[in-house]
Length: 460
Ligand SMILES: Nc1nc2c(ncn2[C@@H]2O[C@H](COP(=O)(O)OP(=O)(O)OP(=O)(O)O)[C@@H](O)[C@H]2O)c(=O)[nH]1
Ligand SMILES: [Mg+2]
Image (cartoon, rainbow, N blue to C red; front, side, top):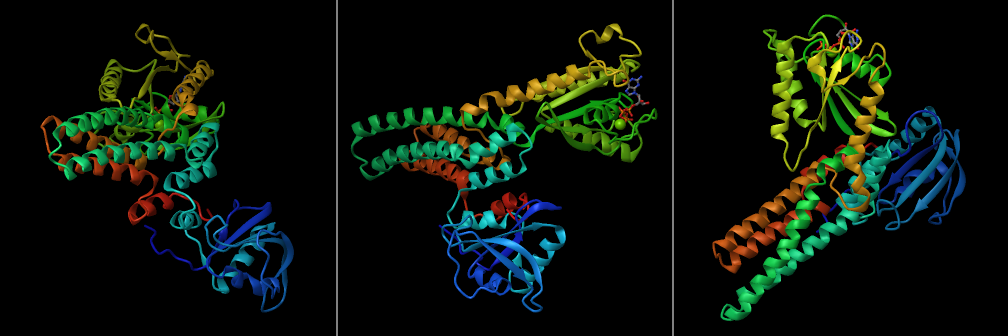
């Protein structure tokens, strides 16, 4: 069901900020043409989807602010589904601020983050997965992010979810028949076995979709790589080396980095999110202890942990790292698989025998850096390689909904084994169907919408 949504005209810069050849200002809402009309000196109603060159004036002083191109989109044939005006002005910050200032003075309100897309969703122009896709497309720096955005925007995930939902609803129809005609036992037997067969296929497809989540996130947000090691292992030096600039403080004092530092970079076109962390050690220092706790938390979220062991490290430093890496392996599950790359850092000093299984690297000479970069690129490609052929999940929201659908189907199986009646079985299927619907858009849930759109930029 569509909620009533705000129709008040909103305006914002839709193109990137900063000087540019062209700036695009978007205005959407009921009678939005009336907001801009006094500035264009136009008395006639505009022809929709027709480009026209106008002079934009301050209506009070008649000062010409800019020569610009105007296009009017009559709702529902617009991005938001409402009447929309787009102004293509010169992209100077002063011109943009001046035009926006006049539009706000004339009754438009500044758009909030993602508000145009939110209106499009509430107006039935797109579903929630397509809205998430638009966000990925707008933010895409890499082919993988673009791919994630395209699959969502093109409706590939939505189609898959809807076909699973149809199967669940189809299975429910059999159960409804059993409820309505309780005396036909033979029919029940056949009906129930048909329902089970259908649901086995749905469960398998669901499991396969859930398993794409980590790789989907690697595509849409980049590979999360955490640099972990004892103090002085060379983590901040490696961060700077991979970024190609001095981002983090490096010093011979153990315990230099306390807070974590996250920076993104492209390696061979793949988006990598690098996280430098506090060196892991037992310490009485309260601030450093918090840093170490944060490092441990980040390690749990990582797609890859680079385990740094300096050639001059102590045996107890290395033991600490070995037990940390063992615990990561133990935590790996079907939902999350953290890869570990063991490094021997400062290999320009020495290459000790204990490091024979580690990748030797020196940020001083550059030895091993390229090998490490290639290994990271390979991990990204392993994650994203298979994604071009099938739908995949990209957000926590989608994953939580699918896990809820999976839980409902598991409960169905349990109830079925315990010979529960068709009403109980139908209830679990209803839960599964609801969870699946919420992926494409439970637009009655304000919290979910706010969360999704708060991550958008203004003007989208
Ligand atoms: N010779 C040599 N020295 C290095 C190398 N990498 C780092 N160092 C030195 O090792 C010391 C510690 O480096 P950092 O990068 O600050 O180490 P860290 O792991 O970030 O240390 P904390 O922030 O204290 O946990 C500094 O003096 C660096 O110059 C290397 O490849 N070769
Ligand atoms: Mg450091």
